[in-house]
Length: 345
Image 1 (cartoon, rainbow, N blue to C red):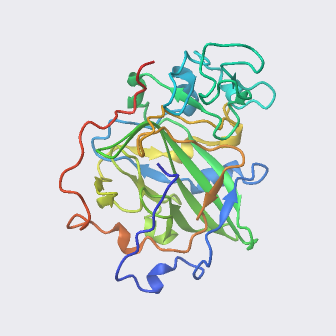
Image 2: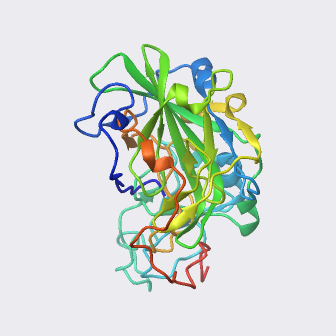
């Protein structure tokens, strides 16, 4: 959901609106987490107040408990029938283990088998659950989709700016068991994130990684900080994070943040993501339907680089309430889209 973002440029955005605080960013910067740095107390101090949408039925969830309710499977890219689960139940510690991760190779090299060796993972090397694009995914039951509630943890990681030692950021990851942005984006496992940008240890902006758009930032003072915590609005069903409660067009679909829902005091539940038992897992957090928008995403993991954490591009007019659909929005949406549940398993 966050992996592929497209830039939507407003027609009437002035140069001043395009800046958050520090002047235009010449090139988008990719940064990775630095687990040895950052402070748990500081992460809690700047953690956002997340306002869930009114009527939200898909609530935040503890990622470890999501794993505990799921089976681990290996995806064969839709060309070959998947066999039984690799693990059920799953040991979260093995998911991210350097020494004893889960492995899959349906046919061991040198041994005969009736399975077609052309299938991904068949007759190939042993793939591990810590290997990026290794083919593993979590397969939860439908009843997990509702999530748990606002006592769920929020996971943080610390990033340093590559060239400016005065700048740093805390990235906050929110996890939900299911994303339901109808009709074009429904899948199991839903990772969302925002980042608080710091300069000399003081918050100056919040970066939003929004659906269907590039990252953008909003000045700290414009986010209605409550006791030092910025307010973030979560859209109903999709959980996209926004700086206002105004509706948003996302790839021809209306994303609906709003007031009136439950408040998630994330600072009471912050955890360093590198301390989680599953840290190191590099697979998908939901089934793979091989249809864009319907595949479970990858989550935070060692070595994952995030783009635009330190963006200077303002969210600006992109967060005003829409009045009319985009000109290229189709008049009839397709029906019969996949539900995000694995089939034939």
